[in-house]
Each structure stands twice: as C-alpha cells, then as structure tokens.
Image (cartoon, rainbow, N blue to C red):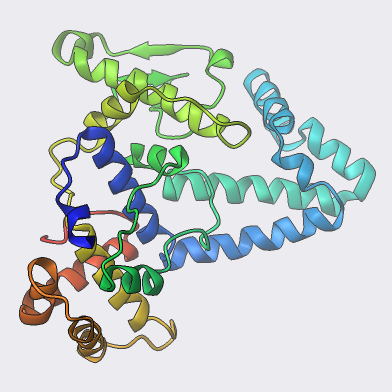
Length: 315
C-alpha cells in the first residue's frame, strides 16, 4: 500500500536519493530556473540551426574546453577559444559572439544553482502520482540520477579542500588537469573524517559530469559519505506522501503562473480527492483534519520552490 513507502527503513543512501528527488522537484519549478532554461533553449535553437549543437554535447567537446582553459588564462585566450575561432570561421562573427555569451550564461547558471543543467520538464507529474497513491499503488520517490544527487553538494557550505586555490563549489570535472588540490592542515588535525568525505564528494562530482556521456558505477560508500558531508544532522526528511500532496496543491494553485490561487482556494480540492478515495489514517487523516498544519506545510513547499532549496515541511 502507498502508506508503506513512508515506513520503510532507510539508510544514508536511501535518504540521499529521496532528498535529491524532492530537491529537483522543487528546483525545476523555480521561476528563475525556468527563465534560465528558456534562455538556454534559445541559444540551443541557434546552435542547432548551424548544426553544431550535437557536437557541443559530446565528451570530446568538453575535454577540448577543459584542456584549453586549464593551460591558458589570459583574457584574450579565454575570449577566443579554438572552438569559438572555428565557429567564426565557419559561421561568422555573430556565431562566435553568441558562443561567448553562452559561456557567461552557463557560468551564471552554475554560480546560482550549483548543479548541472537539466530539462525542467523531466520530473514527477503530481496529478498522476497522487491518483496512484489514492488507489493504493506505490510511487517511487527516489532518484537514480547522480546528477540530481550531486546537486546536493551545495549544502556543504565550508570546505577544507581547495582546488587550484578555490573552494570546490563548482564542477571540477577533470581532476587530472587540476594543478593542485590542497587540504587545510588544521582540517586534517581537527576534522579528518570531513576531509575524507570531501574527497569522496570531488570524485562524486566528477562521476556526475561523466554520467552525461556514459553510465557510472558509484560505490555505496560514496553515496553514504556524500550524504554525511552535505545533509547529516539537517533534519530534512519528511513524509513522501505529504510532500507529494503539498506539491499537488502548489501545482494546482499555479496552473496559471501569472495569477496563482490561494491555499484556501485549492485546499478543499485536495480534501475532496482524499475523501472520494476513502483514504483514512496517517497522512491522509492529517490532510482532512489539520488545516492549520497543512497550510504551514504548503508555505514550506512554496519556500523551497522560491528559494530552490529543501527543508523539512515542519519549519
């Protein structure tokens, strides 16, 4: 039964996959993320029109860019990469300028969201998922996408490791081309386990990028270490069923994004669904009888979406 999915024992790997699942569901609804995606799509359409987009999605392209940027650092060299020069030679100066602006867009996205770009249309349909639960069927609330899991690395706010002099808050994909990885001497003495977890995290990030091109095998110890580094002690876990119900409320309220409906307008619709399905006990009883609490959970869901974060619903 659907309630059983909330009662299964979970280890740190399970928790990581579940939190990453909901974190993506909140982020892909964030208005700023959606605006970034719309702009990315316009650039992608242009690159497709000149028949270079597919080549820009290959490992060879990424390797070429990292190889060049790891060995060249003057402003002129960074502005005019070999790929840009080829674009301008074959498709004109405008293509080169757009490619350069595309780089700024990508950097801005990474700085803001600390994750790899993903199509926001990929994800849970809250209406379909709720209907399945209401007829007693199970829904999978875990992600198996290590790109989504790696995005949780942003929750490690303080690093003991630096990569080429910088805190590794972005995607250091090719560690072999890294000039130096330094570890805080004080960190080694005071927090040796955290140093080990951060090394796992760097490896996990590397695999997340590699997963764009080929399936990656990640050891369970890496998942568990990544969870401990970024999420342990943060008390983020909440009922999957309740998170889904609140997401359904949010989606229903925002069917017209320009004119969202209030909680008071959509809450009766959820109660009506639950009542017609004859669901009782546990989360379903809370939905039917604890309007004040459900209002707070709805507000927490809205907070997570607006701030592209994840918290317990009981904030």
